[in-house]
Every structure is written in structure tokens, then in C-alpha cells.
Amino acid sequence: MSSVSDHIQLMKYQEKQHDSEFKKREWLYINDTVSQNDQGTSVIETTSLSNNSNFLDYKSAYLSVPLLSTLTSNGATNEDISTAMPYMQAESFKQSSLPMINSITVDLNGQSMIQQNQLIGIYNHFRLLTSESWTSQNRWSTIGFYPDVAEVAAFSTANSEFAPSKTSSNNTILNEGLTEKFKYILDDTDTLLTSTLSNLISKTELSKLYVSHLSTKTAGTSTTSPVLQYSVKATIMLKDIHPLYEVMPISKSLNFKIQIYWNYSVATATHDATVWTAQSSQFRAYNGTLPLMLNNVSDGFNEETDGTLRASVYVGDTCYYKTQRSVGTLATGGVGKQVELHVQAVQMLEDIESNYAQNHLRDVSYHDYYQFSL
Image 1 (cartoon, helix red, strand yellow):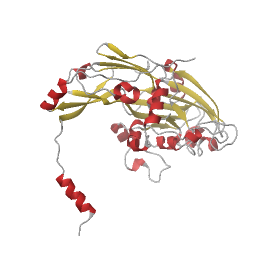
Image 2: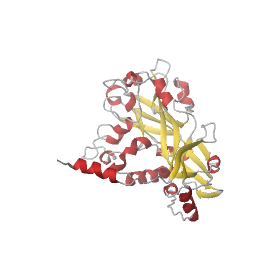
Image 3: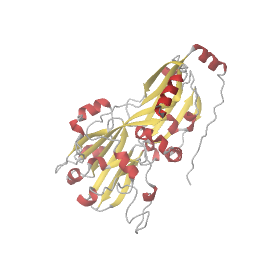
Image 4: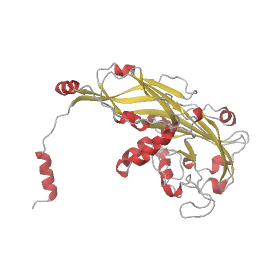
């Protein structure tokens, strides 16, 4: 007696196997040319890659960016925050890692392709929210993306269906997206779990794997601030930064010079043991935006303690903000120092490459945009 599975299995054996058009695939990477990340700029030149005989696929290329976010109290005597805080629910990036980029410039073989344009994260987030769907959810954890729930995007002083009183989008009760983004950063000592991650892997081994994790957790004393430091290995696709890379065909001898201006930021926020009462941004590189979101957690700040927190984020493994370095005992990040560009290189079969080379002249059409402030 036959079944549907028998017919499917028979059809698989009858399928014609197609040979691959590529002889070899491999991933190449280069580091940025900036050794110190305190200036908020990274420069990547693909000269070494363009001299390679392989075809390069910049459409699938991505930046691997080490980030270090530091959370301390505003002074050196507030020791209650560290003991009361649910550590892995303290802060997150807004929507994804894209807010770290304020602007970019791109030159191709000496010709300007993308001019500097401020606040491109606003448009890039619009593109993510309108182009991503639940069918592409499998890549969300890779790029650190999860959409915030629209019902809690507002802020109201009175109760309503979509904006409860004094409740904004930075809460885990109504914002499922914020809760999901917390899961992208690991904590080997998280006691909120039934079985702690340290039973499987230690913090030292997490650093060797270069995965996003809570790299520093230091309790405060009467003279020092508590310190939480998040080492995040962010993956930023080139096609998510600018539409040029969405339409870039595989090609040879393309010498890109990509200069990235990062949104280094420092902000303070005051909590009265119920809600956030005040916030301010002391420093935003290139007059950019604040990429971090402090969470008004239901089982942490608003039931345990009040005080003023200070949060910062930098590229690399060092926190450069002097105030945080003076009030707490800071450590270096655990996911690397330099920004890396990863590009897929392919070798075609001889006949395929010959046919591809005959039509080597191609028109590339892409959308560019400019923003003006009034």
C-alpha cells in the first residue's frame, strides 16, 4: 500500500542534479584602518580584496562591530542599583544595531558614490520595518532586530487603550520586541533562569566565542559605583546601511573606501522608584541620536530603588567616558577591538565566467536620499 511519502521520496530520486556554477566559495575579511576608536570614526578600504582574482559579493557582505555599553550610577555612592537590577533587562538597542551608525561616505575607485548624510538610522529603520516580515525572522537575531510593539510607542499622562499612564515603549510588559532583544545578549550568571548558563559555559569561554554577553558585573560600594558592561558583537549588513549594496552585482576590482561615523553616546536617566522622571544626553557624536533604550522594568527599578543612571556606548573594547571611569571599576570588552568587513568571494566555472564577462557592462540603479532639518 503506497503513501504520499513514498511518492515524494521517489520523485526526489528522479530529480536532475544541477552542477554548481561556482568552483569555490569562501569568506574574506579585512579590518578597519583605525587603531584607536576614541574618535568615533572607522575607515575600511578594500584594496587588498580588489586585488584578489575572485568575484566578490558585496550584497551579502556585512560589518562585524564590537560594541561596549557601560551602565553605572551617576555618582560613586549608589550601591543599591546593582543588587536590585535584573541585569539582562536593564538596557537594549533601539530596534537593532543600526542606530550606532550616524552617517557614512563611500568612494568607489576614487569616485564618490555616497555622500555624508546625517541621521541615516532614521531612514534605515524605516526600511527595516517596511521590508522585514515574519518569513525573514530567522535573520533577526543575527542583526539584533525585533520590531517594537506599536501599541506602546506613545506616551500618555492618562490611561488609554494604547498608552497606559506614564508607560512608554521601554517596558517588557507590553513591548514584546524589547523582551526578545534582551535574549540576544547572554549572561552566564543570570539567576532568573531555572538553570544558569554557567552550568554549560563560563564567561571566559563566552569571550573566546566572541558572542554578545554581559562581560562585567560589579557591585557598588560606599565609594564606587556598580558597573554593568555589555559586550555586543553586532552584525550590520551593508545592504541594510544603504540601498547601493542591495543592487551591487558580484564583480572584480572594486576598490571601496567606506568611512563610518558612529553614534557614540552618553546619557543619564533619573528614576523615582516608580517611573523615569528625567533624562538627558550629555554627549552624542556628530550630533547624532542615542542608540540605547533604558528599560523601565516592572520587577526591577520601579519596585526596588531610585537614583540616576549613566549609560554609554562605544565601538571597540574601551569605555572612553571619563566620568564613568572615575566612579566605577571598568573593564575592557570581550568581543574584539576592531571593526571587520566580511565579504563572500566566489570562483566561477570557466564557461560560466566567460559568459558572465561578455556582459560585464551593467547598469546599477539604486535609490539615494538626503535629509534636511528645518
